[in-house]
Length: 579
Image (cartoon, rainbow, N blue to C red; front, side, top):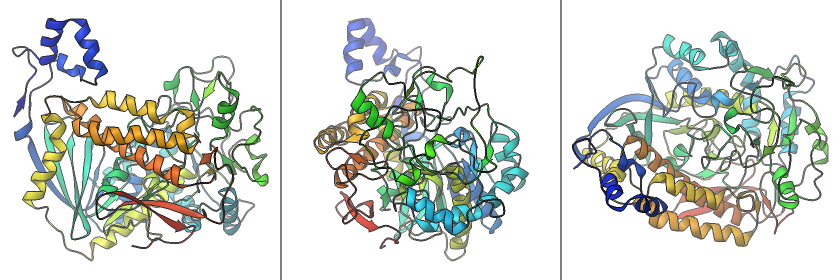
């Protein structure tokens, strides 16, 4: 089956335009029909797309901080490693946005490792996993030392410093590959599949072990650099039976009302700034406090990011431990840490002015959502499948932003742990080939949107989803009746619109798969928020404004039951799940 849109073959869109005029355009665009019919796209022979099959020991999906250390440490442990990324090494996802990395130096800090873990737990109201909190702090300094050797702190962009250890070890990297499927056989992961964004080919990867370093995700909001993160790894793992967690929590990073693309993170950081190290500075920040103020005070509200000045007084709203009530007036950095730069006249575009919420809509607090680990080795509930960084629901910092810079440190530490663990796992098993029948089935699923002659464009469906999920009174300041109403809309998208997603080129094919993943994530987020009938950290319910320690000192895990339906379970804080 060929889809052509060449100069000698008038496209359907062009024909409709000539026949019906601008009115036809408007009517069809409201239905989500793709405007790409009007373009002279390259010919795509859907049925005869090339199929590549590549074998390795450890497949690392993602090329940010977690992916870097996963690949390097798996290589050190003797495994054959391949890295695959939807973007560019060190230049996609949230890694380029992060400019501060936590390093716990016991000789320079005023608190011990035990005291550090205990204080994080107090700030997180018990939601953190003490094992992963300790692991991050304990190994952070070693990871920072390696980054210094690679030149990470010498430039504001990271591709060069990330490339150094990868090239020195001859670790192959395939960029601009959209992975859509994890593949399981006899209960264990045996590889993954996806397609090239630039070449007309589907790629299958046979691997003894897979490490997801795919980051978190959102609903493609404006003003925050997570537009290429759509929870792909989490949803792929969920689809093959892995347990995931943390969907009720919310990240509260703010953004700029003007010049939103300036990548302002609330501390004045921009891509032009070189990264630095941060000492102990434990907070209780970036929850939904500002959202609560906006809900009660209305708009416009000239809100400021935590730590940058006096904010509007909050009466009621999310609970904050007394110990941390004054923490937000301090600058980040600890004893020898980085301080936010001060901008006056001649400030870069985007600094100053009105700060708005919802800039990271759809994302939870770093490390509080993702695959459920069964131990301290970043191992998921599926044998052979590991995750690190924001793809792992490790609750390293809990369900609120506690230690500044711990996200980047946690990604580095967990990437290294997962890499070594996956390499050791590979030594114990034999490789399994992906069957011809499975390759045929998965290829059909990957390319299905290209074969549809009619349907909904992923861009339109995504815009519809954003309208449902991003309002302050749905995602942040929650009430049961509105959550259930939003869920009805999302279930309509899931049941009717997802099966009709269509694509006219490889770019739209990527968007179609991302849109599908975002809709599943939205369903998880709403159902988890409905189920947790209390308020804690970055989850706030107007109809249940108090903490309920009798019933809710638990993490909520999500998995597919035997009928393929979404199911939930409670896992008590600081325990390991049943497998």
